[in-house]
Amino acid sequence: MRYALLIDFGSTFTKVTAVDLISEEIIGTASAFTTADSDIGTGLNVALDRLRRVTGDIAFDFKSACSSAAGGLRMMVSGLVPELTAEAARLAALGAGARITRLFTHELTRRDLKDIEADPPDIFLMTGGTDGGNRACMEKNAGKLRSLSVRFPIILAGNRQAIDACEDALEDFPVTVCPNVMPSFGVLNIEPVQREIRDLFLKHIVNARGLSKTKEILSDILMPTPSAILSAMKLLADGTETEPGIGELMGIDVGGATTDVYTVARGEPIDMNVICKGLDEPYAKRTVEGDIGMRYSVAGIVSEVGQPWISECSGLTSDDCAALMSELLYDKSKVPLTNDDAMARFDHALASGAVEIATRRHAGVLEEAFTTSGLVYVQTGKDLRSVRQIIFTGGSFIHAQNPLDIARHALYTERYPMSLRPKKATVLKDDRYILSAMGVLAEREKDIALRIIKRELVSPGDISSGDDS
Image 1 (cartoon, one colour):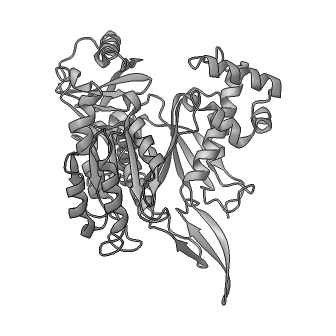
Image 2: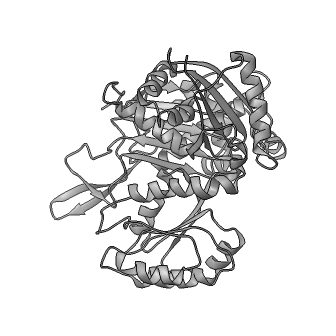
Image 3: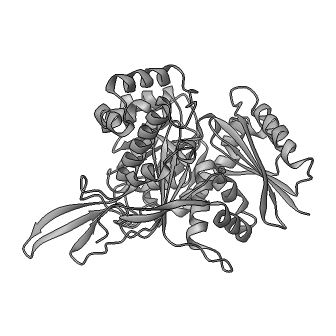
């Protein structure tokens, strides 16, 4: 027999998954609170003890992990123009599984430097200018970072003519040089940077987070958790040489602190009178909404959709909603006691709001423009109206009494007619939280991981916006 142990060191829970590689089955899962503040191995050992009660003692062929513990991979990025090099840097960092704590454009200010000094990133990604274009911004920013008393890894991925001066200015920082994320106007080249981010995560961040203490248990820690989920999403969409995928898809992970949205889709215009604006979108794209979450970021959801919206969606009075929100702000571990108590209904509304906000921010938008030839539409971002499959993960969705009602908030609506969200879709849910584990397994066994994902995902049904034209 051959077995694999797959571990996800989450920000709240450490999840373990045991896989029989011969029968291609998940033979057990378990979880425990992540103990990143003390010894991360403590929580892992609790989870492993719980797993053994299900599987018995097993000799694993390999034990691999991903991690978002202790804040995950925290990055700051800088670029020149917000819509160009800074956006390219943002896409590169998010696609690599990072959480962006600050995004800077143009030259760094004294206040920017104070913020960096006060809360240094795990990695700083510096971009700016196309090759042969503006070099002054990157060079000045490198000189300003040199004045800091803190040191951290820096990736240089901007105008190649500025690299020598930047390296000289940053000689006492750990510096990695990558090809320009935007070598010419409007052209993205983010994959080399994403590979370097992942390498730096393995070399530096794993040790800084105390994860190296588990090396006697693990074979390797491969990637940040969001990167593992994106890898699983892409595998599911595209398939392998021998195992077909299911085609273009959207994925939504509603968490306690953030809501992540993934799309594996080209997103090109589907109408003749539409022209594109801005950078080409990555085929496999991730966005993360740090102000939208079910516990730590409840206020962000209520602030954006409004308390009347939450009250209407939950069927609770405004006073009841305000009281429940106060409870969550005081005790973030609070969970519903039954499927239909007030907290469950409030959570239903919060999850619906999180999905509504996050998918709207992720999807492309149309704008009207008048030219000498008449009215045309300008598209920014991806057109997802033809995407027909949406994958959901996260406890608020998995344990929901009516998940399809939450899922409908990911669709196109006449309330936001210019938002290019899907018009109808089959909903699939990750009932056993296996997507991150399968993203890790895919590093060694792509075909097995894909077959397990396709078998494990559960469909509660189809959803439609009511306008399928």
